[in-house]
Image 1: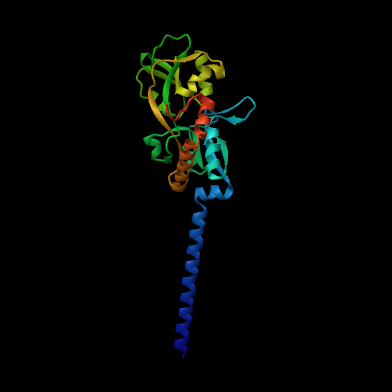
Image 2: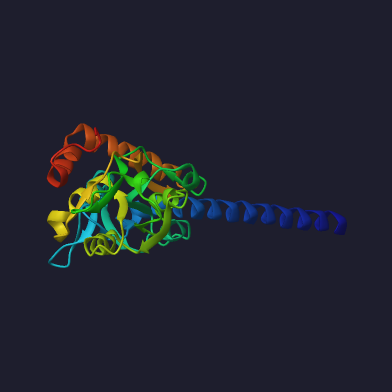
Length: 269
């Protein structure tokens, strides 16, 4: 009799143990699902995105102290498609990927070029515009292109693909590094260096925007595809952003934003 009762007692404990284990697994499974970035964005109704805030006309602080630019408008349009609000976070470019992978923000919508090296750390959406590296010189300079320099001094923003390219040039003796292209433009306008390298669209608007006398020299050094960066594990967010990007391109919102800032559709350039 005791043996039978003992068996029933053990069976009951085993059954309760199994039930508790299943409950714990279920709870943890639900918790993991809630912790995905896309679900967090939907539940909070906010999508955070990073950029420097110093890369006009893509992202910059205007005369009234407001963060504005092409990237900001694109982020707002994509967030609207997701049914949430876009919340910008400004940060230094040199370390922006580290900020993303450490979950300081949900995405980088800050004119980041898609490169093989960056793809080792993050994933990118389809390109949301195409750009290229351009060499700029003072307005009174007779330097025809970057390769014409001999022991030249060239300015660039730290951590950019432009910086990586300049480090491979034997004819560059000194690379002046800046936190933003605004500082880069000012230094070139003061003729503290022979030239600078930045994105074509960014450099072309500098004379009017900042009153600096600079001009492009030579053809594009190389072209770039610009995408939105997300963490490797955020596959659902990547899919939804690509869907949202496709929608704003199809419904004309993208072209409207692009023409507002550049007068052309830079996805087709």
